[in-house]
Image 1 (cartoon, rainbow, N blue to C red):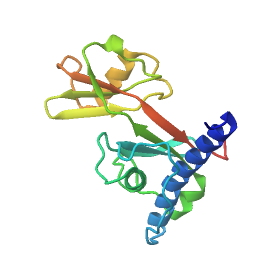
Image 2: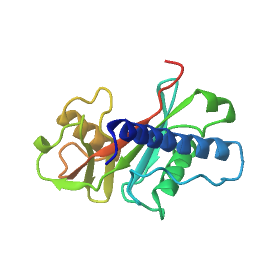
Image 3: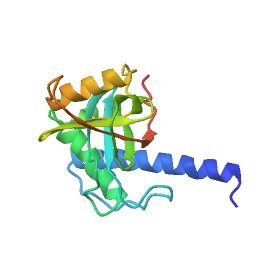
Image 4: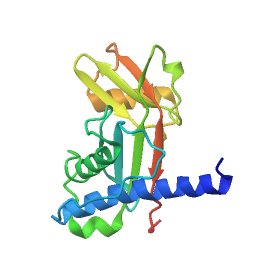
Amino acid sequence: MESPGHQADSKDALHRAVVALARRAVERHVRGEPPGEDRPLPPGLPDRAGAFVTIRERGELRGCIGSIEPVEPNIEQEIVRSAILAATQDPRFEPVSVDELPRLSYTVSILEPPEEISSISELDPAVYGVIVESGNRRALLLPGIKGIDTPEVQVAIARRKGGIAPGAPIRMYRFRTTTFSERPEFD
């Protein structure tokens, strides 16, 4: 049996490794360097899972992209893919430049499988992310977003994000995440 101190060290090592993997992927890609070989992550994550990477510049959103279901063969490649896409393909922003790299901080969210829910009362935006679907439209909001304090606000923002009319019938799914955040040095 592991001692509590060893478990904390293992969690800290995993936390640092996950965030460092996202950071290295973006830095290499933006600088035009080859991907490189990263060491496997320490134990503690599923082999495959959906993953989102959120990039902030001085605390402000700079990019966020990921996948609900895994598209890569392993979690490491899923994180790398999401990090690069968040830095270069988020349609709300220009691609990250080399000059911005030192000012960026990273959050990696590993998604648990979504479960369909029948009522908004089954949501808690601090605990669960939400996926809303209507026809061929779909949108996702991660849990714990600052300023989203009620399920009603969470679903309304997700509807708007997905271009789903307020009265349109929707299917809702909730999911939990395991989140790894880098503390920015410029707070």
